[in-house]
Amino acid sequence: LDSGSSQQAAFDDCISVRYKKLSSSAIERYLQRDKPYDCAGSIRTEGLGIALLDELRGSDPGSLIGLPLIALAKALEKFDIRVI
Image (cartoon, rainbow, N blue to C red; front, side, top):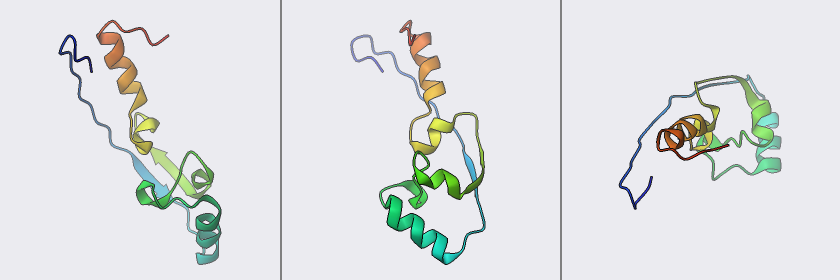
């Protein structure tokens, strides 16, 4: 995290996603509207894609879009970096 002090942190998280049962036309409408082709699973959960899900399980929802923010905040606090 900090090249000056050589402090480092590593963390990971597991997220489980369950999609709704969707028709081909609903999926096509979503793809046309949100164009999530650069996203994992072709779903943009911070956009319209959240409406495609039945359930999301995990300790840190930020992990789904690539950065476990809860774990990051804890690591920063551990290094005496105040988040708030």
